[in-house]
Length: 226
Image (cartoon, rainbow, N blue to C red; front, top):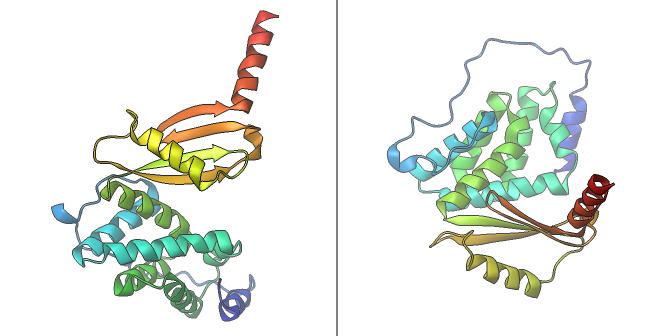
C-alpha cells in the first residue's frame, strides 16, 4: 500500500495549482533493440511500447527475472490500493510529487534494481505514470511468451479448490490446445454471473461450459421455434 506521505503529496496537488506546460525533451528508456533483446511477441498501444522497451533493457542488463518480479509486485498494488490509479493519473503532479511517487513505487517493487528505477523515472519524466498498470500487464504477457507459458484461465461461479484446478491443468496440458514444450499458467477467476459450470480460456481459445451459456442457447432455441 502507498504510504501516507505519498497520499499527502497527491492531495497537495490540488486543482487550483497552476500547471505550466514546458517544451521538454521526452526521455527514451531503452536504446535500440538488438536481435537478442527483442520481445518474443508484439504488444500494442503506448503501454505496450514501454513494456517492450523495458523488456529489451532488462534483457541487455541480464535482469529479466527480478524485473518481472518487480512488475508483478507493482501490478498487485492496483488490486490492493484502489486509489493508486487516481494518484498516478493526477494532472497536477509536480516534479517533487513524481519523485516521491517513484521512490514509493520502487520501494514497493522490491526488486529489479536500477532497471526498474530508471523505468519508473522515465514514466514520470514523460508524464506517463498513468500507463503503469497497462505496462505491468503487457510486460507479464511478454514474459509468459518468453518462458513458453500458455495462460489457462478458468472462470467459475465459486472459487475452485487446488485438486480441481490440478485436474483441469493435467487435462488441458495433454490436449491439442497446448503446444509441445509449453507450460500452463493457471488462474481461477470467480464470476457468479455464469451461474455454474466453467468457462475455460486457453491462450486465444475459449471453451464455454457455463450454465448461463446453456440457458442462453435454450432461450434462443425456444424463441426461434416460437
